[in-house]
Length: 334
Ligand SMILES: [Fe+2]
Ligand SMILES: [Fe+2]
Image (cartoon, rainbow, N blue to C red; front, side, top):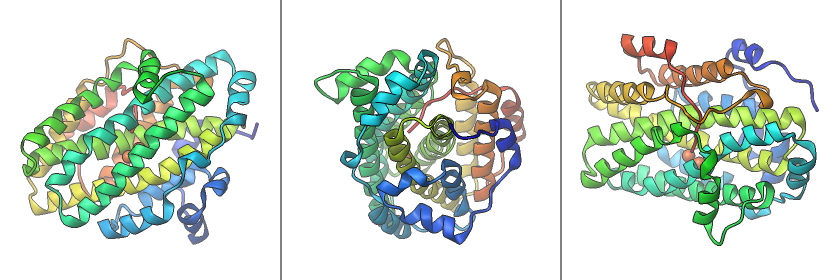
């Protein structure tokens, strides 16, 4: 077990500065070296390029270098940690959080193709790569649930069905909204307003806020307790993939607002919808066994949202600022 600073202390430290050496380590590490990479540095890396967003072909070149083989992971030690080192409370909290991801990865994989239709050629190349990333993340969770958590099933959907009882209700919120918005885009693939609404839910909220926050909670737990090395490796590599998805998504939203400043209303309205449905949760997630309080997780969400918006130069409307003060979003991910 390594020494652990409280999440509150870390959250108040503010942005970390990454050296060129750290950036190289994050960008170029092969899968077997990922265990040594600190998750906080990877999350910092997501924001590093947001002010001068890389273009889609640069992101595609990074994808070609960074893609990893999900079958290179060996979950033997994770299984031992899961049954022998982790307490029942830790397992329960961990499963409650990771099940949002288990379902989230699969859903974003199947909702993404419609967004390609109205995209520029360069963005299509980037999204094609992103779909492959999300498919790999789906397989990663399928393996984790079979080989570590111990759920059985003949196929991917069987294992998803088995983890569904743990999924927090908020999954039904942002993911239900995304399914609805994906249908809108399917019907009118060139409707830029529908695409911006979809992009706000998917790239800004689900990937930029929920996914990165959940990653930070579960990966900092695994590092602090010294458990689940294959989960840590695969999910940190996943976080590096998500940094490309968030950067691509923020580039899309930034370009859309620059082309037509009234698009900001679509972003604000979508955030209003998401924040208004986020307070409801009949299946609560208890973060304490993983070393986090609910307040710390809420603070993390809000920090993640503000940083994305600030970095790409999108302001919040005053009523949204107010909503952020009392809303308590729950966890899911993609
Ligand atoms: Fe993903
Ligand atoms: Fe993603």
